Structure formats: C-alpha cells, structure tokens
Length: 408
Image 1: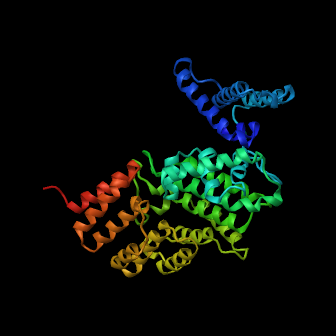
Image 2 (image 1 turned 45 degrees about the horizontal axis):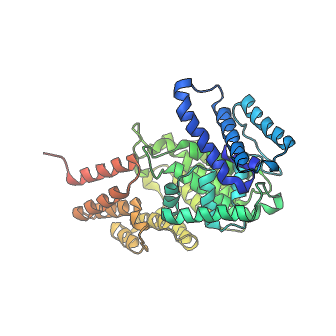
C-alpha cells in the first residue's frame, strides 16, 4: 500500500504515504473487531489511507496540485483496488510494472548514498522497523534513524520523482536493489527477532522479486542470477531447518530428504547463467557455497576444503563479521576447533559485533568440542543475552543444559 500510494502522491511525499497507511492500519484495529473485516481488506485499507492523505493535503492547502482530473484518476485507482481486492502480481518486460519492485528502484536512487537508500527501502518498502534494519547492518538504531532522515530530506529537497528509470538507467541502481533483496531474504531465512526463526513470506517475496529481475533483459545480469540461485538453494533447505515446534535444526542434523530438489535444480540453472559474465560478485561465491551444501548427500561428505577456499575469496570481497564467522566454522571443520577459535579471535569486534549472538554461539561450540566446559558456558550465556528470537533462545538453553549434564 505504501508503494502504491507513494506512486500516486510522488516520492517527496513518501513520509505522508507511510503515515497514511499507518493511520489506516490503526483504523482497522479499532473498527474491525466490532464491525467485522470487510470483504476486501486491502482495498478498504488502501481507500482509508488515500482519503487520509487527501485530508492532510487539504489541511496544508496543497490540494491545488491535484485538479479535478487528477483527483478523478486517483479515485479510479481506489475503485480498481476495491474491485480486484488485491493487486495482481505483474511481470515486466521493458519497465518495472510490479509496484513494490518499482518503489525499490525509486528508493535506490543514485543521488542517495548506498547505505541510506538500502535502509530507506527496507523501512518503506519491506516494512522493516528501525531496530531490524540496525541488526541487519550490525549498526545502531540512532545511526539508522539518521540515515532515514537524511534520505527522506534528500528526496524532498531535490524533488526526486517517484518513477521507474528507463531500462538504460536501471544498472546504476541494481547494486542497491540486489542488496535490499538479499537482506529481505536473510531476515526471512534467519529472523533477527520474534517467535519464529523463519519467515517464509519474506523469503518467498524476495525470491519473487529477484525472479522478476531475472526475467527482464535490462536487469538479468549474471549477478542477479547468482543472487536468485543463492536464495533458491537456501530456501530449498527451509523444510528441514526447524522441527515441529519451530526450533532450529543444525545443518549436520537435517533430514536431507526434506530438501526441495526441484528448487535446488532451479538454483543450479540460475547458477549456470550467473557464470556467463566476467564479474565474480559476492553473490556468486555465496551461491557456490550454498550449492555445495545443497548437492551433498550427507554432511560427512561435505567438501570443506573447497568451501574454505570460497570463503577465503569471499573474505577479500566482503569481509563482514558474518562472512568471517562462517569462515571460522569451515576452518574448524578442517583444522579442528582450536583453529576455528583462533579464526574467531582474529575477527575485529566493535560494540555492535559484540552483540551478534552467533559470534558467541560459535565460540561456545568450539570451546565445547575442546572440552572447555566453563568457557563454553560463558560463551553460550553471552549468545543467550543477545539472542532476539525465541527459537534461538531455546536452542542456546539446550546447549547450556547439555553442558551441565543430566540432573541426578
């Protein structure tokens, strides 16, 4: 709804579109429990949000920008929503027709700094909260708030238009768009807060949008196919990542017969298309690592030497804490937990990385394998302090209980 309303109102009124949609949501929470939900809930919300925005414009005496013809056009859009109930997913050929994808391209405007445009897109288009964005960037909420304020001010002051660029201008925005889709999928694959470890709807939406890009000749670059392949490989393993209670199942313990083989096959097809260019991106390397895991019949057959070699390349391109932690896990598989622990200790740690639970969880696991029960317990407790999802917390509590042994 924000995407559609922003296209109607214009990019400089992006904040107004957000506020109007929030107002509509609040009205629904107040009225629906007593009146019942309407036949087309999305259309009802869209109409309330539209009228709210129009009222605000009238109050600011800015309605002069909307003549009768324009207002008639806006009403037609609302009536169309009421008729269809929900916007149909559209593919595009020479321009981006999907409204959410269109707004992603708008928010990833080249006049905005990359970090600001990605944060803005996650907030406005993907519905992330500031706290979620901060965790995705391993940053602070204050820093993210400042990025969002500056981005919206730039859009307003420079009157950036809420329109999709011509096909020839898409490429300069693609890097930021890819990063948005990657972070959207990552939040779905391993949620950073809440009562669920996996948010299937976010994974499915990220794959859908990436697939739309892969079908357009203007955006179907090798890097796009690599990103889509990565998502497909990871999503194929989702049915085996959690048990019936939604708790985490580690890769080595997963029932690989539950993996979606058709999705893995599709991922391999896109990985093959990704290899046709001359650029080796971080998505290529991550997709290759995911492909190796997805096509290995048993955990004991995993080629950790090749995976470590890929992580070494990835470390050169993308030396993020997450990459370095995953590399340390690969080191431990080949050289033992002491080497893995040394690799972890070499990771630069600031106040934000210190709060990343998987750093301490990996440290605890390496200590456990070395027989350092006290150190392992300390590390697992640190991870528990920073774990934000209930499945993560339960997983770490089980780790701690196993360290202490059975109660006599």
